Length: 132
Length: 348
Ligand SMILES: [Zn+2]
View 1: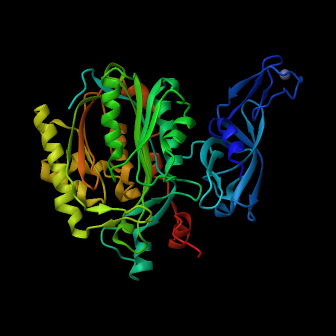
View 2: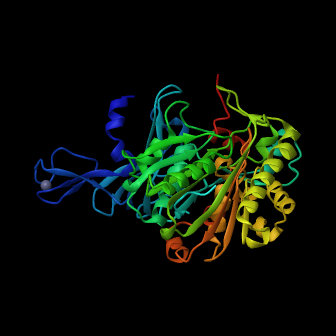
View 3: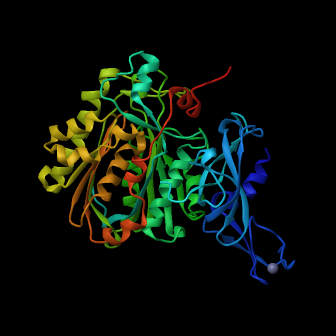
């Protein structure tokens, strides 16, 4: 695992920091250097509130390397209340109970780890709103 | 002990993971009967949870209740004996997640089950000296126990966090705190070992009971208070029986102590155990109530605190999450899933 890369992504991973375009006000997640709407390069950090709605969900039973300890789990596309869509794992819900249209909110969990000697990556997952 | 400037709790929060294992299931696997003495249900962290994630959840709940700018926190101090990294602070992860970095002290405190109350004393001193307006302290643990050991019948998991600040902004003001510490080898874990060792019967009278009686007696003497002056008395909860017994020995009634014994419903969350009981007492408190908190940590020592609840609790508390919401959820797991989630299965 690339330690420098996960370190650069920590603001996004831990606090849902994306970007806001100072020209056209577009909000994007994760952080970008250039606005995908107007192409402008004047962007500021923007922390998303963490609320959202699932757009689609899938159950993962054969996980990529580093995630095997967590199967089975639900993965989802979550539309944040501010607009951007984020791909994330769901938590605190059984995969068979997860469905599109669920209200969810951001929580922080262990996302992956590189064996017993590598760093642990903490990041966002989404749990059903109000759980508990 | 009390700081020069008065200090209190601005916000508090807890977290308990959703999975539960029944001590009857532990007993079924190791003794074959399924009928343990003093049955308990224990919280089990999921495979993606650890001390850092539980501390983050508790810290976010505490910050939501406090309603302060996280950049004003000058310290984020968590106590734990189950650090995700042996070297690398857990508290830096927590402080980052709540947006408190970089102008904050962040460190992990260690004293078996009582580092969270040590951090609370230090945070009170930091605010009380004027070095900080706000400081966060707390405790979180994924309690470890060797498979089949007596400890496995009581080990739980959870976290609790408190934002301390000036008493005139607080929902509960600190009256005083005491510590009573000796060099006692009642329970320990050697470097590099996965599970702790304990002195069996040695852990009761000369350890838990003696130290808590001493810290609480000194606190009551210092403040000139009697047990009847308190609405609630919260003690460390290595099992559901010890806190009720030490309450009785100190002259508190069952009604003052038992409602805040959370360990029957979630096990002993080590550093978070007394703190989650204390959060329950705050969830239940009315302005003017006085609450006693007494931790215990093997090694050994006890920290005792007296807090008086203010009228601010009514507007601030609804912004948090009641501990009862975590306690009343339960997703049972059997021993096999529990062993997998807790990393008790090692494939050589
Ligand atoms: Zn733009």
